[in-house]
Length: 173
Image 1: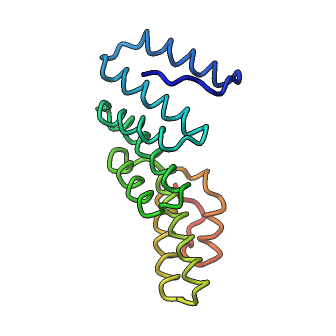
Image 2: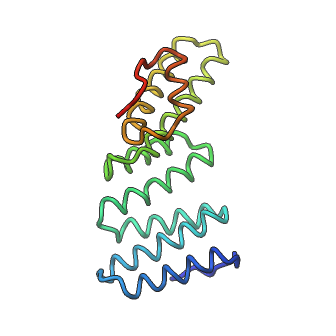
Image 3: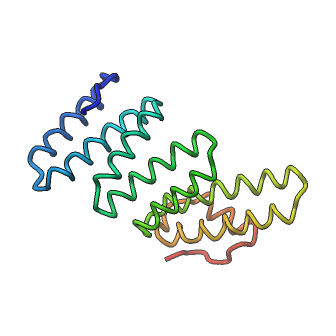
């Protein structure tokens, strides 16, 4: 089950050793430990660009993991893979699944906003101003939610909201 570590740098080795120690001493059940192993292996594969392998590991982790908070990060990482592969609809779907498990995940809200903003830019390039404005408004809604959860983050989004007139708030907390 454990993934062979192809990347032998110090940080990856250290992470693997620490994760193995934590797994041995963690007072959790076998199922939760097994889910963590799949999650760790998924992260390792994802880091190396082995997305198919990462997704398989994340899917296994999801079948075992019961904790909503932990499930949200598995789903979030799956969404990252879909987004990086240009599967934006699927990425948005998985960001929403992550938010269903953990509504206080500003990074998922931000990433949905980024995808919607990108779609707005595409519509603008196609001279479809009505669609562009709709996408930009949706992006604004998600960025506002993300900023409310993490007011010190997403400074560029905060500036965009102000410069486009989509927000008059100076502080989001």
